[in-house]
Image (cartoon, rainbow, N blue to C red):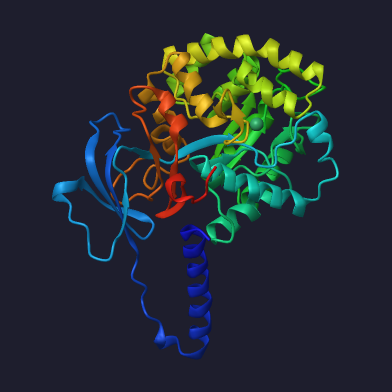
Length: 437
Ligand SMILES: [Zn+2]
């Protein structure tokens, strides 16, 4: 038994005991003393661009960071759980902002899931959530799941019943009838209703598909099938509810239309041209590139899931444009948050999809620090979580990943993740055989 599982069980047991005690005598409740954990001896990487703090002590009280300082001037409270981190670099837990934990793609693997029920899918997603966390991703945004499975999973993770990252989710993808997604709507009232339904169910984001996708057998990636009225109403209704809207989009025409009506982000952006990218920069619109899906590192994955030849051909054709778009976006300073459209832990180019995505950003023109920020501080801003996550800062969640090399010198250091903490609980520590991945 790992200490992680053990502490989760203890927590669950304590909660059950508390509930029983509450029935017997409400006044008998004893306030729990939060556990203090000290991570000692590591270098804390300055993800905000500031200097690194060497030989640091990071104190964690309960689920949040309570103190950070030099080891020789930061006393460790008696009774604290001390974890030696000498020789390691600490970064905030990674954020992957374009994920489908229930992903099904064309091909043999997708076909075998054709009769999957919602309960089966929810459990498969829970397994994928656990692997995502163990791979170093402590927060993810889901951008299209089926029938409320994502809301159920988020609740189970928040309740401590399932091990996984923090989840923000867009529920189902809203589309014009015949589009790339699952929740069809037509006309401004139809789109208003669809948005309200999603928000009522618990969506943190609204995801729409305003052009076709690589995995579609119908519809063109370059088309813009929504009317102005539909687009304007959808975005207005979401914003009136304080919810942001992101769009699956590969079309310049659809992008210009969405930008006119105040869209907050674009996913993929396969074919977006410099005019659109400049407008995105001017308006502060986010780009989540998911570059790994069209690059050679993903071929291993596509072969594994039995992707049909037409799909591989579409990936190849899209890949060159996608790469040029990413280079342009980086050069123009468009705000970028990391997302993969593959499982965060999916093997890709000898590492995980999340790490391969960050490495690709560096190849396409980012500094290693910028690539790291796209998965931490920038992603946290996009998800409006920056008060609570995205950096190793006093007061924020203790979502911390350890590396064996300095990612600011070489982003490939992310390949050495061997320790993952979420909310002060160690999910993985390879040295202690916890959550080995
Ligand atoms: Zn996607």
